[in-house]
Length: 463
Ligand code: AMP
Image (cartoon, rainbow, N blue to C red; front, side):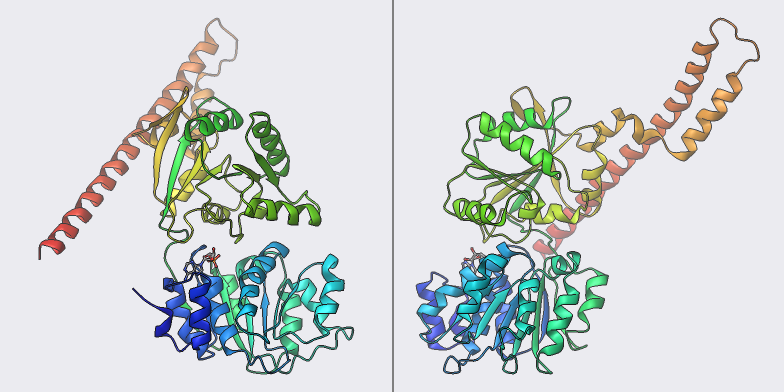
């Protein structure tokens, strides 16, 4: 088993990690810690729950000169909750490094505490971009000359929320050659382009293929004609999950689902942008204290927040930006624990999960039948056949128009409507047949490909 001793870490750090219960490094830690200890700038795309926070915290803290009461490292996270979480991971190290000072700079409320905290210069500051901008103001007179490391955590979210202007401003004030480490769940072209400014051109790119942990099983649940809330009630009854996150995209749906679940008698809470800062903080605390069985939330909670032991994630709908699905599912299956992500859909919303499948995500298919969840061997195919819109290609609409024109009469005679309807139905049937043939062929191709893969794997194993 890999050990933290294998890295060039101080004995103090190795023993601190042991006492904190971290016995062996996670894969991302094994790859990042040695590079970070050498102060290499890097970009790391990593699964949520992979231990990426400690991948940068451990080397940063171990390289801090604790005899020097001067700011040496800054970590930027996109939300108060995320910043606090990083802070909560960093703070326990103060016990082992007597002169280490870690500070959180994240909200207006904490401004007073922030100022107080800065009276003795911290060596490590963790904060949100907005609050960190305060560092630049004269009010703090904080000396940035000793800063050696900058971390941008959840960089894709920092970009989405438009924080790069604030970060630019801060970056401009840092000493040249500051060591920059960027962590992001996703790394799209736009972000890579943006990051070139912060990272030397020969930056290391630690890409990992999986967008969510391999410990998560994804399920697509055809809820048929029942509403999402009714389906949720049945689901909760069947599964009785240990800790379940229920996601809805719209704030009003979060509220509705929360009221509904609460009425069912579950210990539940709600987390969305509607909550005041104070309430948000309290809710996060209670969630982490394991007070609830069900947490109904918006995508605000889908990013990075570490809630231990989430066993199930339910998506009542899929988010507009499908990349958020990966963040939702990433709330479970954290750190080698197994988890399940359940996506509800019906014939009206079947196209969204199809998109996820085409992105390579593997689901198993279930149907909610009465009060049972049963396997659905036909997967999405069956749904598509019954969904009218799926048939309506441009070509088909054109043919329907032609069929209508052909049956048009100058003088209305009895039965002309029936004739038109039949002509339209004929066109639709033609396209339906075509689509079925296409789907069956696709299914066959898929099976052949899977069988070929299995044969190849077997041949390799036999060699
Ligand atoms: P992440 O959000 O990816 O940083 O994952 C954080 C979770 O992983 C937290 O619950 C940490 O306590 C846990 N964690 C981090 N490193 C380790 C490790 N080496 N061994 C066990 N758990 C760890």
